[in-house]
Length: 491
Image 1 (tube, rainbow, N blue to C red):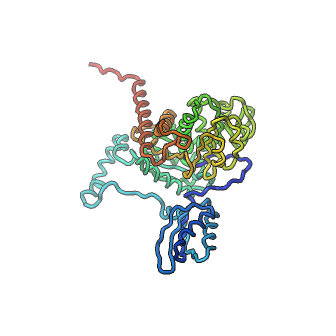
Image 2 (cartoon, rainbow, N blue to C red):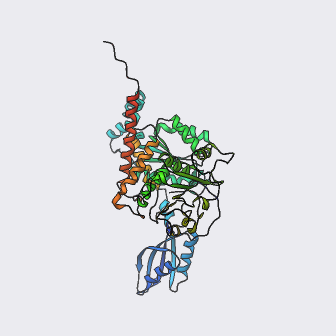
Image 3 (tube, rainbow, N blue to C red):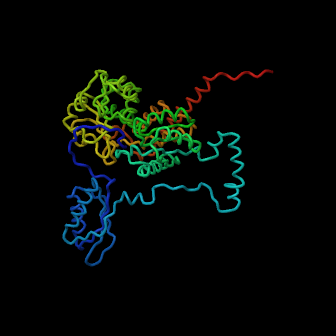
């Protein structure tokens, strides 16, 4: 998952953890002897990296050529690892490859045809003249577009590049790798065809106009990496205009996954949501959606913390989104700093910035505390320190237990909405999706290190899709039942 909110505070130094996002492969030639490979892996380990593979690619009587693959913490750390290998006697570094950049060469997605076009007969039906009949059918009945075109299974992944991951306003071109990745995840986990739509404008009115204009092609709109507070207005107005679901993943995907994880974490520690106090660091898109969903589920109390400190009733000059939070959270009107806010709190949820807290801060939380430090790649508190004091700790990192990742939600949510031909995304769908994710784990498998299923668990997306589809179909049935009955024709 990615941090979508921003919080400022004192930066506490921490050691970054190696991750697959900074994986490198170093091709080295080393003098052939029985300890050659062992010396290489020892040097990499002493440099603080994690060896994930060693492959011998060539050898002769004198030398062994091997590819050493390892996870590092960042680019500077990768350079240090390479220098450590270069400093070894009898070792020649021949090539260094950044595996993340290699994966992105030429992009990550492509378009493939679902039909054969090998004969004149096939061409005549797929294109002219046969396609004209299908065009006319849709002109006569626009709803047939869902049945006869890609609309039934296609989502636009829309961004303006104003809030790319935790990197900020990078623009549409730099946002494209993220949107490609999102499209690949849609296909892999939900069987949904998605396509990046990166807009070279950050004007709210223009974005709304463009998305409205392209909507006829798609069965749903996934808004992504659009900065708050503009993202709220864009989503709200598009929902009013369009007859297809509009889903802002930074808000709703994150909120669904957090509620699912928190549901199971509370089961582990034996607490009820109605009895707990939650502190949320980051009151932007993700944080606001998390707090609204928690309030919808009946959380005991929430304190929202952001750039101006804890949001409280004596604050002036607030925008409508923060004013809503002030009116609905922080029962005791706390107005201090973040370490003070979490004293006695049962749950800390961070969707903000790295290194805002230390282990001693977590120690002052309530017994059996729950910590979700989701800033990525560096959490709000070092998870190793948090685990010394909290009962359950989760992060957004794939190399730590309890990874809270939006891929648990959005593929199944869209799969369910597309299958039901839903016209909107609702809060009831979000709640159903969260409960479906939580229940996939199963009571018998719950423990402090397993509160969410693996993103690769094949049960997740179908369970979420079924839950969302049921809500959508129930809403359609209720709408029909609540409508005025048709007049009885005269005899």
